[in-house]
Length: 237
Ligand code: MN
Image 1 (cartoon, protein in one colour):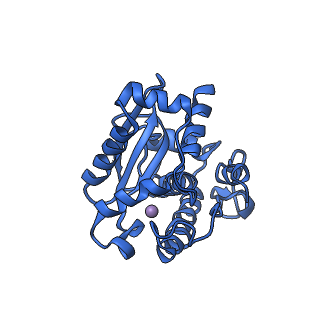
Image 2: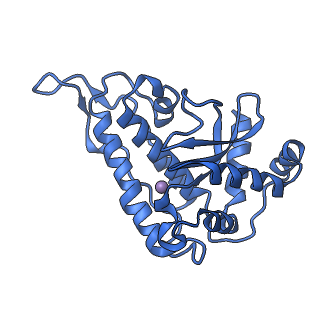
């Protein structure tokens, strides 16, 4: 599956997916076809070796991410309001249940995560993104340090992010659990263009409790081409 198709699948909208009632007078999710689906990985489970091992990738994708998708679809069954997209849910997350917050977040975050990792090493940010990184953070190395620090300091489970805010500034942040910068409950809102999963399930089999070693390794497989595309596409909107 190519990347474009992958993103399209991930962004599956559920607009118009609800009909008003079933035999019990309860809201009903229209059909399986309109439910969210687990996106395929754009590479094989062992492609990110030795930085992320095959078993971690397989469990992370086929069990954890699948679990978020399943629970997201269950949580959506009780929603009657018109929902146009996953992003709509996230931007208005304060209106919804904790189950939806955790699982819509979990689905969005992992779908992003798989695309910004790559088996192709040594990718570089585009000229435009690099210029902005240098303007705001001094250097790419310094930005990596800031993201690593945000990821290291996240107590318990969560994510570290590089995002773009409404004024088109980049910023680094961290969120707990499956929250993300799109949600209208975070300190600073923006569109994430890079996210690092620091739940133990992302690294424990290979790195045990050494989150720092996982964070050092992951820079080898960050897809700066994809991160740059996300940045430049955002600027066009
Ligand atoms: Mn995860």
